[in-house]
Image (cartoon, rainbow, N blue to C red; front, top):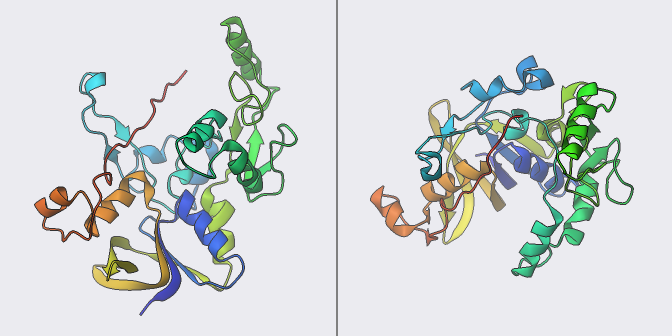
Length: 297
């Protein structure tokens, strides 16, 4: 039987980082479960091909939104990475921190430890930035962050257009002044995409206490109100990966609640409609997903 201290569902951004950190001191064993395939290949690694994987079922789960009442009933594509590295392997590689005021607002609402001053050290710890403001940026972390070329005439024209339109300018939107037109930052290293798989998962897999299983996570196994493992499907065979300490569900904002509901955690009435035994009645699971619009200029 497969068994580890920690079992992580999903080798995306969160799962890769968790595997790296949990295995760092060598005390704990980690198994990562991922359904998606390899991220090695030009369509993933070559930055100029970034829009192609979004339209390929090989790399994208192909989710779509419900009809949006505020958009005339349109159904919008909702890409999620079905590949090692998750959505960090198919995204636009743009690196933007959350706004400081958002973090501070969370803390004001009771999320202790989530002020921007609390999370800034972790942002710095993860970064290997080739620019930016001293005191705000990290320079020896696993995630390479490079700044866009300022010699490109399109950069100068873009920033000047923003200035003429009355917008603020900023030299580092991940620094003290987060609002304004400025140079884009991207997770690219040596001309290649630098995803969570590159930054975290591959270094973790070089350790003896980390392994990766290719399979579909069907549900979390819960015994006596405790998660004890993950039921997976590998080549049409069902098996259980046991977790001695914890199961970590990191299967994206869409698949994570799905797995929880299949495990009996979610709105009780909805689960019963599908014949799922209720383990914990949690009405918020699978609801209130909010995403922002994307505008191409």
